Image 1 (cartoon, rainbow over the protein chains, first blue to last red):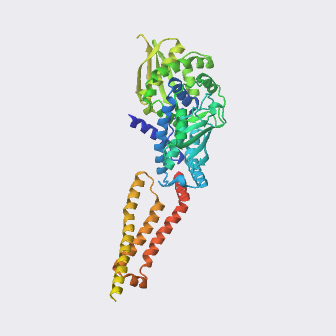
Image 2: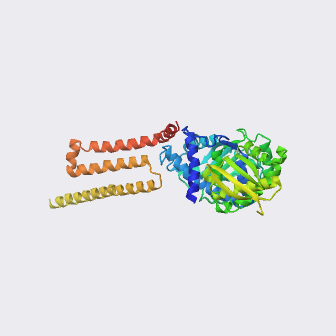
Image 3: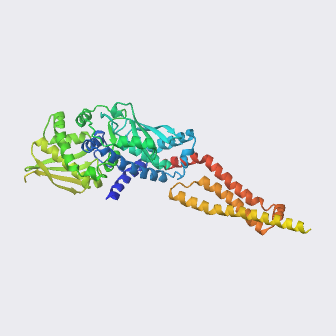
Length: 366
Length: 116
C-alpha cells in the first residue's frame, strides 16, 4: 500500500524534474490546464488541521521522508557526484553557503518557482552549529490564511528533507516566521535532528494543536479573485498532488475520517458558494469547481438522486482510485449537493469509466 | 673485527625490521582504503578526491617496495628506476588535489549540463 503511494509521490517529483530539464511533458489536464487556485491545496491541509490536532506532525513526517528520498534521487539523476557535499561540516562558511545556495537555487528553487509554490532562498549557513536558514516568499501553503502559529508543515518538511539528502545529514526544520502570523515571509530553521535545541523546537512546532484557519473567509477571497501573492493565486497541480499524497493518503490516521471530513466540508461549502453565485441550483457546483480550476464536473438530477460525472480533476486518476481520497471527494459531493438541494443524499456508488469518475447520490432512506 | 661484523649484522637486522614495519603499515592501508570505499559507497558518500590521493600514496610506496625486492636499493637508486613509480604516485596525488579544488565547479557544471 505505502509503496503504491510512494510511487505516486515519486511520479510527482519526476514530473517536476522533467519539466525543469525541459523534457517534453504532456499536460496532465487537457481541458482545465495544469494550474489550480491556491485555495484547493490549502483547504486540504486546513481541513486536516481543523479535524486532527496531530495533522501537522503527520504531514511533516511523510513529506520529510519523501523529499529526502526524492532529493537524493534527483541529484543522482542530475549527475551530481555523491560526495559533492562531503564533510560539509568542515567546509569554510563562505564555501558552504555559496555552493549550497547555488545548487538549491538551480534545482529546487527552480522547481518550486515552476510549480508557483513560492520563492525559496538560502539565507544563512551556520557551519559551527550546523544550522541553516531558508526563506520562502509567496508561500503557497499559507498565502491568504491567518493562524496563530506557523502552518507550513509541508514546506518545513520538504526543505529539511531536501537539504538532508544534499549534505547527507539527518536534519529537521521548523518554521520560525510564517506569513499566516503576519510575518513578511515564511522562514525556516534547519538543523541536526540530534541537536537538543533543534529537537526541543521541533517538539514545540509539531506538538498537537487545533488550528483555526478561517476556511470560509479564505474561500471568499479566492472566489472574489483577491490577489494573495505577488506571483498570482494559481499553483501547479503537481504541488497539489504531492501535498495530497503526503497528507490524507499517506497517513491512515488522517484518512480514517476522510468521508466525514468530506461531508462536513461539502455542507460548509454550499452556503458560501450559493451566496457568492446568488444561485442554489446544482449548476453552481460546476461554476465553482471551474472557477478554481479544480474539477470538470457535470451534475444531473436522476429521479430522487443526483448523478455526478467527474471528467477531469486536479488529483491523478491513480490517486482518485485510492479509498482515502475517493471517500473524501464523494463525501464532499454528498455534503455539497445535500445542502444545496436541502435533501439528505448519500453516496451509493462511485465507479470509473474511461478515466472518468461517476458518483451516484441517492436519498439516504433508499 | 668480530665486533664490527656483529655491529653490521645488528644494523642490517634493525634496518630490515624497520623496512618490514614500514611495508606492513603501507600494506595495512590497502584494506583500510577498501573498507573505506565500501562504507562510503553504502552511504552514497564516496569521495573521488580522497580515494585518488590515497591510491597515489599507496601505489608510489608499493611500487617502490616491489622494485626494491627485484633490484638492490643502491643499484636501483643508481640507475634511477625508483623515479617513475614515485613520479606516477605523485602525479595521482596531484590529480586528486586538482580535482578537489575544481570539484564544486565540475559538479555544478554536470547539473547545468543535465538541465540544459
